Image (cartoon, rainbow, N blue to C red; front, side):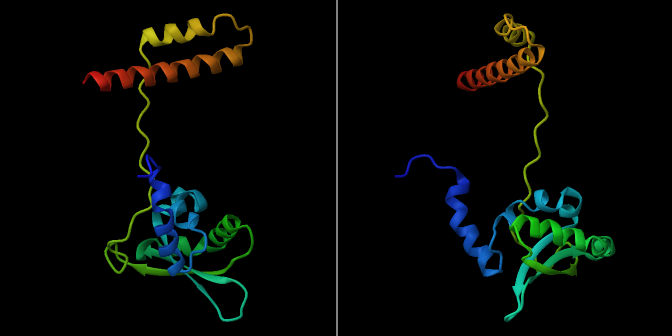
Length: 168
């Protein structure tokens, strides 16, 4: 038994193996696509493979997109190439090619590397606010006081949630 481990560490080798079979030396390009190119472009595209030429410099990145959004993505290819090369740290990609298909096609059944939507923040209760303000009473610096109150609210809210889970 290895005890508790983050899921990312357990899947890291498998993701790397699958990514390398399609030419992705940096798996971050697959797992953090929205962060690399931005949420607008990531909603319309997905990286499919990276092909390396024989003896040539630079690789070709193939992106999957729907036919309707292809002209808009085509105009942004230089920016996409620059953002991907920034992810690699050097000019690894020399060309970006689009592959157009319907929402269901040869990419069907692939894992979606889309981050889960963030839950809406619930305002803390008045008791928690009062306790947080009491913990920062002696401070004269308003920025430090605000930061400490926010920290105290987060800690107290999380503690209250854990206590509620144990009871229920």
